[in-house]
Amino acid sequence: MNRRDFLRAIGITSLSLPLISLKALSIPRGGEKNLFECSLSDVREHPHGLYKIGREAFLDGSIDWEKDKVRVALVNGGYSPDLIHHKTLGDIPRKQVIAVSKPLSGKTQIDRTLDAENVWVSSVYGDQIDYLILFKDGGRRSRSNLLACVGEFPPVVPNGGDIQITWDNGFDKICNL
Image 1 (spheres, rainbow, N blue to C red):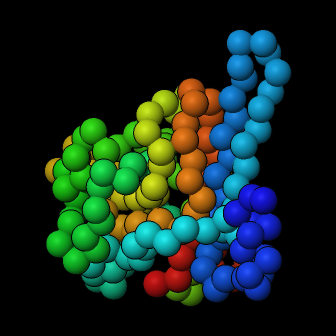
Image 2 (image 1 turned 120 degrees about the horizontal axis):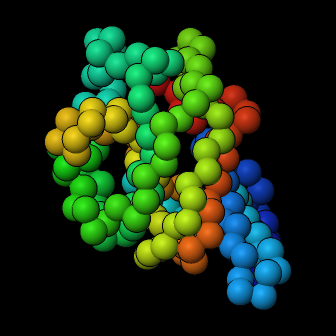
C-alpha cells in the first residue's frame, strides 16, 4: 500500500495546505522513461512557512514578487529550518543544498497570494529532498534573502533526472502572505 492509499484508508482525503507536486523524470540506460510523481496526499510533516525576513520584505515592499529574481533551492534533511533567525541562503550549509532552480517565471501576486509557473530543475543528483526554499537571488549566498520554506511533500530522492515543481492551482497557489 502506498502512502496515498494509507492516508485515505485512515480517513485523510484532503489537507488545507498548498499542493506541492514534485515530478522526477529519469531516463535509465535502457532508454525507458520512468516518471516518479508524488503529491501532497503523500504528505510528511516538516516545518514550512515564511521566513521572518521574507515576511518583513513583503510587508515593507523591499521585494517585488513579480520583478525580482526568485529561485527555489532543493534542500536535504541535514538542514533544520529556523524561520525566525535564518536570513540568507548563506545560513543553509552548501552541502545541504542539492540543486537550485532557474529564476521563477510568470510570477503573479494577486492580493496576498503568490503564484508562478511550474519549474523544472535539470539533472538532479544527491540526497533526498526534504525542503523547497524560495529565495530572492542577490547574486551571492550572503545577499540572497530567504522568503519561504516548503516542507510538506512526499520524499523525493533524485536519481540524475529532471525534477518538476508543480505549484498548487487551487486557492493557495505557492503561498498566501
